[in-house]
Length: 395
Image (tube, rainbow, N blue to C red; front, side):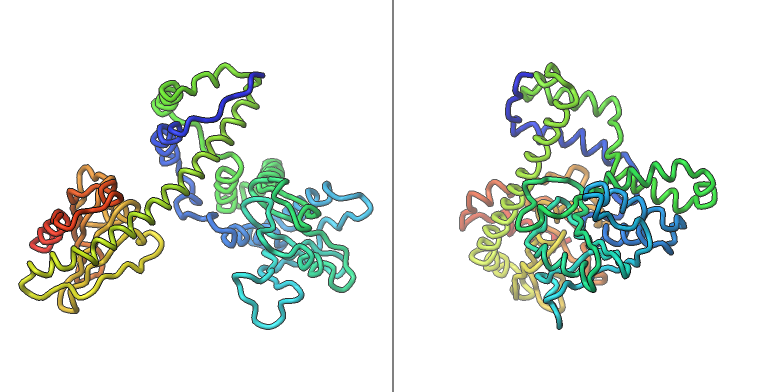
């Protein structure tokens, strides 16, 4: 097979619209609730499945299926019993007695234990010990002379990440475990009929973490094909074998998307810093000179999460605050204000007004200032942000 070229950086940008529309069209409770984006959330789900008395009403079948996968990866002479384990979460490993720091302590996400055997589970997106001590996990399992296995439960098995003892851990992927569980359930029509709620929940779990996104509709598929042709990637349709080409292409897309996401976040940080510098050095004075009922009293940039890309201009207790928002925060404000902008341009800085009653946002408006201009640096006599703030205050 001819070796495929590196992916064109602009391809990810071109494909985002069609891929995002495809994802948006699919209902899945895990996507709606943004569940599974943190290891603790998924650990709760897996611990529930592995508990014999769990409300899934599957008894110890999930536990047995999980141990089958564990035992298949270790020598026959040290294989563990399939069932009979108690399940606990967030169990501190030996050596952290007292009051451990949750940010640095070696804490097993899930512990399956019996008097004779134990399975110590570290749940993470990739097969990576992510700076935890493998030998402490093993010591937790072997307490009391038990046979024990340390398991990396993960979405993606990436062997080169397993270092510092973690190369000795057994790897079980979400897909392996959930596929085994799905096969088991598909053979139990009686359980499906008697437990419709649990079945729907598990079906959503399988779809989200095993099957992946459903197929795109025709319009989105044509958009995808057009983007492939326009960005010089169409030659990939001629490579063989197709399965390998698709896998390599998916890996390249994922790597490029990760890089672009990281770089765009770094860009947001730079924009916020430079906008904050302009606000403090120039904008506060510009606005204060025009306000008849008192100057701005403070500038607040200490926002996190979805509100991080925001600068608050405070006017005192008797007045509403004004916010300069951009990027992801502008999207959130646009979604929440009563009167939405018809065609929001997220390449610009927005100005929004606080609702004094609720503390939320009551209005949002474009400014004439583009994010690229903020990066280049705004001139000290640039009054476009001043005028936008004064205009929204007048409303």
